[in-house]
Amino acid sequence: MRYKLFCKRSVMKMCLLSVLLGQYMFTTFAFGSGEAITEKRRPLRLLSDEYHQFPNIPIDQRAFPTDTSSYRNGYRYAIDSAGTPNGLFWWSQLIRDDFRAATTQISPGPDLMRQTDAYLIICPRTAAKGNAHPLNETDAQNLQKFVAEGGILILVYNSIDEPNNADYDFYGMNLIAKPFGLEFQATGTGILAIPIPPDHPQLFGLDSVICGDGCTLAFHPQADSAATVLLESTNPKVPGPVAIRVRYKKGTVLAIGDGGIFGNAHMTRDDIGHAAAVKRLMHCLLPEGPLPGYGFSQNQTASVQVKQEMTLAGYPEALRLFDMPFDASVKIGYSEPPQLDTRAGDPSKSENTENRPSPHIYGLAKMANQWNGKLIVGAKRDRTFAVRWQDANGAEIAANLTARGELLEAKPTASALDSWRQILLNDVWVNPIDPYAQVGYDWESPAMIAIPNSRLLPEKMIMRRQTAQFNLESSTDQQGRPCFVVSRLVNLPLNDLKPQDLVDPVYADYFDQMQISLVAQGCTALMQTWVDKAVGLPIKTQVQVSASFWWSDRKNKTGFIGTHDWLTHETETLNYDVVTISRKLWIDFNWSGVSARNASDGR
Image (tube, rainbow, N blue to C red; front, side, top):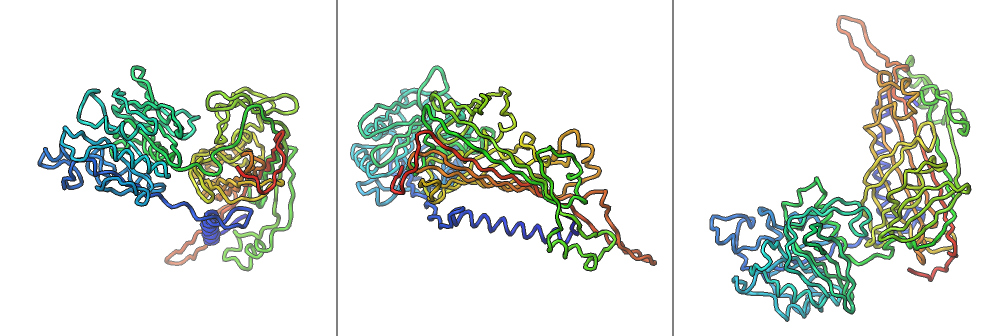
């Protein structure tokens, strides 16, 4: 459709208002259920221990003072230390979504659970080095009680350039760690940038973590303790874990071999995503949510039905996109324009009757197709399952599947499923699941988004990687099963697209940028998956995508209104064309051996 500039601006303002309202509704109500979402979990309290450190010498910003002895005896890991490389100011702000940090100079007592949710101890000095409050047996007993009751304890050692260095309280740290099966070892790792594998269960989607001369850790299995190694040394001469999480009774312990991981200086390493990994490391301390992952298991099979519909809508007389030949499966229909557009395009209402023709025909091109096949979950290999998408003729796409629902390392083998490849690897269910999400909780993660193609062909869609907003919504029933609803919302600007990108290369010259200028474009994509509460398997997924493109076209020439006098006044009247391309998916799963459950079943 063609609009004047003032009309376009009004429409875009309304679109912005709609997006903002939609985002508000996204955080307030459950899609499709009409139920209010529970309030998002508030950040936990975290106390950083300064009682076991040197006396708190007043130093401006905890930075280097003129009195070097004060700096040497000061506590460099304080959370208000903004002026030292190892200060924790940046870290304390980084984790604000999950924890609100403060300091304490009071010994942890038996009632610590009343004072805080989490407690942090970093590398205290020994009594021989002047520490008036070294760690002791009473501290160990009180902190064990704190964790058993549901508290979170974070134990962090420091750089070990000399394993026999007596500056730091190795004995005291292990006194605290021992009840949970943990042990700090006197082995220096050297300075490492530890890469994070794409199938990492907790740190998925992240790059690397810097470990600066930390020590390795050991876990000794015992009752009431379950350990997860989060990071391991990549130094072949000094192998072993450098970060371990232990679930102990109702609580959690995180042991880390290097305090510098949390330091201000390392947080600036955007080249390897260090800060994002540290934030996730802290996020791993939260209790698991009601949907910690999908319930995939070995030797499962699901019959899968995928229905897709794409549409191209606009006014053919003003849109070059309707000039192209479509695939035989595309149905094109024409109708009288909507009444609103007819009134808006009434020449009698226009200031420029020569260049503002009334719209005569509204066009809608539509393509619908369907795929029926199977998802076969095979053997589990380390952290992932080997899976295959398979059609009735035996054509396959093979990949690896994580518990969070990510399909990784898809094999590039060509097959009859190529036209469905993008959908089967990116659009079948919401992922990645946040293992610690409670109902109403939202999180962010990158996602691959498909932009609908103007030719309405599934294999020609443009792919973009964009940060998506995820939400674990309230419960509802689907196909007779109590389900969680998980959603993914993306608002994607498309300012990098050119007119030629909307069509196949053979038609690119007809969409040359000398003829067409894109002035605004964007896309909103909403995906929802219903997950069976009892077994954790996806039952149904719906995807809705809407992409709009505004452009000026030289074949619909710009007009001028002016006066010819001793002073000439010229006013340019700008006309814009707009097209909307939409895409919808409906995906249903029928898992072998999984039947409907009543509402009392839980997971």
